[in-house]
Amino acid sequence: MKSALWPFLLPSLRSHCELANLRDSTLFFVADSSLWAARLRHTSPQILHAARERCKIDATRLKVRVEPKPAAPDQKPRRRLSARAREVLRQAAETMNDEELARALAALAERD
Image (cartoon, rainbow, N blue to C red; front, side, top):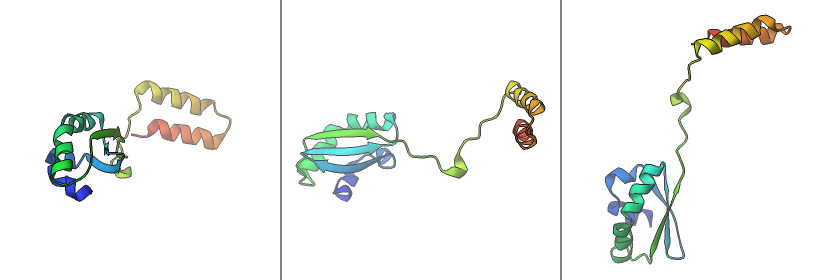
């Protein structure tokens, strides 16, 4: 079913949307953001027409769920600490009785 509808999706939608299911004459799609979900909903008349006429899929409705793709671990953006946050961590490290925790806080304050 997915491969049958694939040619009728706009090329820009193909990498952001996926056909998840067909149930009770409803095509269920998953989009990776609300932007692509809106674009998919906007083209739903054409998709439903192609499903019925060209693919012989008895679909009368299209529903979209937004499910963001998880970021790859190596591509996760790293947040930088503000100068104030660094200073607070340094001060906390200086007041710690636990040396291991003090070292960890100081290392965190120095991390770039």
